[in-house]
Image 1: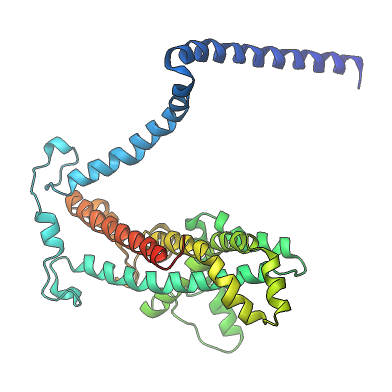
Image 2: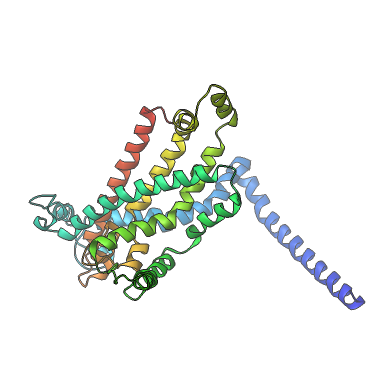
Amino acid sequence: MTRTGRLLRRRADHLLTGFFNGLVSLVDAIMHPLQNWVGVRGMAYIFVLPNLLIFGVFILFPMLLNFYYAFTGGTNLFPDQRPFVGMDNLTRLFECGDFLVPNSCREDLFWRAAANTFVFVILQVTVLVFIALVTALILNRNIIGRGFFRSVFFYPVLLSPVVVALIWRWILQQDGLLNALIMALGGERVAFLTSAQWAQFWVIVISVWAQMGFYTLILLAGLQAIPAELYEAAAMDGAGNWQSFWSITLPLLMPTMLVVLVLSMIRAVQVFDQVFAFTGGGPGTATLYMVQYVYVTGFANQTKEYGMAAAASLVMALVLLLLTVGQLRLGRTSGIS
């Protein structure tokens, strides 16, 4: 390095040191009197306050506002311009001749979305947890390239749900990659995106593919927390792999499995962006789910029924609360902590 370069570097280091020293002095000038005023214990609340403000403004306040909107009517956006209608919105949602027949309901789209969401949650969560568990068990073994495969399975989690949907839409469209492969093998084009059954199938497949890595890592962490001495003792007693799995792995993994079940079920009920970008809720209403119903009712329709959308979101929130509490209670009664 030349003499000029050394001088420039020293000057830059000096400027940076001065900047950071000034910044430390400024922070100390603010925090020291504040600590004297609120005390050492009170400083914990000062540090948490920015996060609480963000939570209050962007989460708590919208939740309270949504609760208020659920009991108001009209098409005006501002709360002071919306008349109070009481339970009318909720009554309209549950006005049905037969809850198992959506066409008999006044808000048939709500019940179609509820039925689609129920089927989606059952199938998606079951397949997701099973595949994540099998993958975690494989990645927990001493296989070649274990670190590489762990990163590969987690990579889809890093992608935006919209990007995932667009990639798969390009693969599955009428002139997409998969149909090109089928035709190259002598088959005929398959209407993956215009057939209700195929659309529902691929929505589940794509969501499992995109989310599996996250839950695999959680289960993998649970597997690695199980002491190896237990397996060694079981092997000395003559237990095979299946016996060790059912007697050691599965019982000790149950607390982690409960976390995975709760998180995956909440996420499945709230599915929206990926499906919206992939199928738009179609064909027809085959992939219309609860969150999309709320979006369409409140923002996409010309009527802008904010009250109905808020009421539907309250129902969904109550279902999620009941499911979560039920799973946690089931875990406690089963001895899972």
